[in-house]
Length: 309
Image: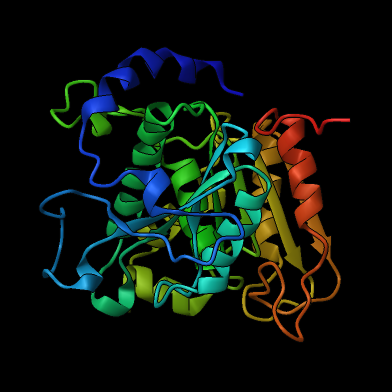
């Protein structure tokens, strides 16, 4: 893991007394539980950049907690897909329940959407705030704030790759202690992600919802994540299918190529068959076997402990 993240750990200790509207252990379901977890507002008061005060204007985090006996100390922020027009539950709760069963504390982010009038950089603002917040909660709850990853699918993968390539290390003089923390994920998992917004491999619907009808070429390039990879981009796991007709496999290939050039560790799994948006698999639409290789990769990067026995 990135040792530089340890530098801010003493700071996070001061966050133990900050805003905490609910006790997570009581409010969130454990893996396999039937209860629907309580949602937590991303900002406790006024939401920066809000167009109104309705439900669609208030981003939230929904916790999914592992059985305490299986808790690994790792945390995942989950960004569902939906072309920046909606949020796919099977790429949110579906992932959270599966990863929580393997001991990872999970939070699903409901970020603001283009279908509700929002445009970049609001979505990135929500994702960065969420990453900082779950990092603060990791320290508060006895987890490891240097093992906080992000997973995103489709347009959620674009948001995750944007966060991974356009993070910041926090504002040391911020009055809000959460804003002093880094928004850099420690690992990134991209599932059939939208990466480039440039033709011919862009997903036009996601680009339109994120940037509007006629974005400038400069803005399109700036939000094409393959152009923003540096040596500081976090280690990344990608998977895609050749048969994906909605988001071409070239999106993952372009990102992997950029990671390779920058010397960033990555794993790329390209499966021949499978439609877009499969997640963990759906009735009549099985997903390729990506999950176990992903866990193996997370162990390789010491995000998860080695299996016992």
